[in-house]
Length: 79
Image (cartoon, rainbow, N blue to C red; front, side, top):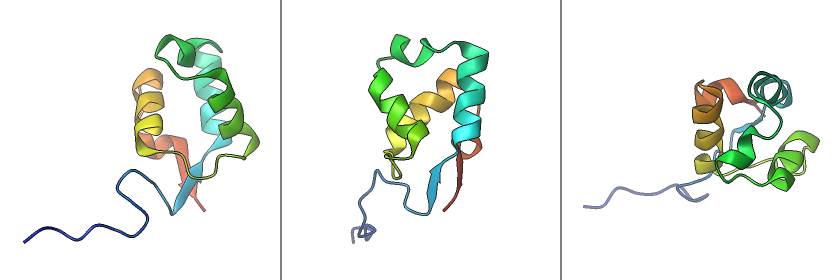
């Protein structure tokens, strides 16, 4: 029997939003261009920081966590 999947899809983090301060801290520590070095567009980071992307994909947040050498939970806060 297959496991039931949540209605919002397997790659979304619905109850958490990006923590702007944590992302800014990571950018200050690792350089403003660091996300581009792993294929994350500058526009994507801008949208995370200005709040227009409130439900980022899990893969994006995992990429940032690996880049900033932290846990995904460190980059998110409760909605």
